[in-house]
Length: 631
Image (cartoon, rainbow, N blue to C red; front, side, top):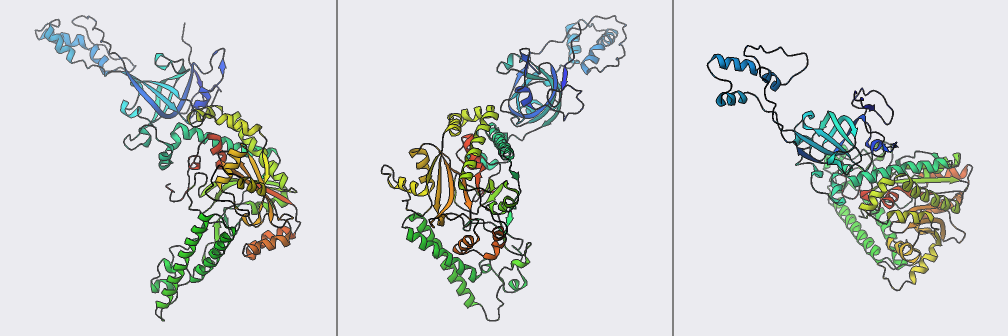
């Protein structure tokens, strides 16, 4: 009975001829595929797989003795080789009778030990045979596929195919595991190696034992090959898809907002300036040898002194946050020293010297000062006031040198704006979207969630289920302050007073210890929220909220925005912002104004929550933080 030819699979379960080596099957399709008639669905199928070696071992085969030569007549003539390919050993063996004839003619005996030994020495021995067992992963799932390769089919030596990180593309037949694969449900018996990407073992970072996550940050281009980072990336991708799914399902339109902007969306942010003028001194500057310090104008420094002095006075009036006050005083002192140095330099210059030009941004690419955006909500309002409900999803930038496990310089943010809505609408939408993301990752990332729960946080699944089913406590900023003031069994580093921002320590106490569940804090003092947030009737608080999650902190910030043009104009003056820069924003109030609200969701913190990680730099593919931008 003839053996049945193996079926060929490409691109999944569709049966079709295999014509190209690129028609590989993802390992997730094989390892998480369906079962048919109680057997693994792909057993007996021929497939092409590709991936990277996670681990390997070599099993030596016992060498088999060569079969004894067949007796032949003395005058036998070696037959001509047939059309099929034969090895050198087979050719020599076929000519042994001919060698015997020559020996007999010369007077020797082919049966004598000495002659037989000489004769056998002419026949080369086959090289020792081995079987390679490789654990291969292609990044599509947590599980590895065992790949069995006979050394006879490898185009490279064992030392090049066995190391961790080696990339292979191979064709073979899926079979039930051999004795060496008892821990697997299916394995690939390789018939042909199509590609081998070798590894320089002495330089490959993952050749060593398991590296901690903080060490892997130095190899952000290689770390996706680790099982942990691969799982985090798949979970991140699922959350990305879930974000779009939620808003598209509820009638929101996706709008791309600019990354380069001329406005400060909050009014008090540390921003990255975008310019093409650096390293291009003017002719006047070249004539007097301007230094880096000279590039800072005295007028700019004096303006900074005024701003920093105002901040110090504000902190003194609050009579709290001593640490922030000390830092502000030091910053002010350094700025005053810089001003003195610039004044002294101006006085010491010869009268004939030409004063260096202040940076002329009219010569810049955009003809004015521009920055990387801190938030896209202002631009998003333009489309909300025309299309109703809109959202955006992209990177946001803050030039903050503070080293914090929950924030880096570049973070991805989901921003939402809804026309004809108020603060309660924004809070409800924020809560619903957050719960949707938590549910999605549990329903659609089961294998990865099992892995990160085992490797990172065993309580992860239970915590997410609790966040989905629990009710969220809603309190005002004033209530939060009153609760924190009554705490006697815990000493906060920063003593809280009404009118200053709640610190991460304060928020952690409220969510983790006092309420022990998510909380939404609303109605903040107007001084701690952006200029565009709607002023409440009391005149001292604004319609803003923050959603605080235990162990993570604030993941969503939102507000109802000011639709009254007179109020908005007053707030712009209070923040000492340039009115000209916000004329376009004021136009939205002049022409068809409407009540509207929205929020910003810190996407990277959602990934942190869903994976159990504690540092956002491990949840972002290529993190950008103070002093770190390697690639």
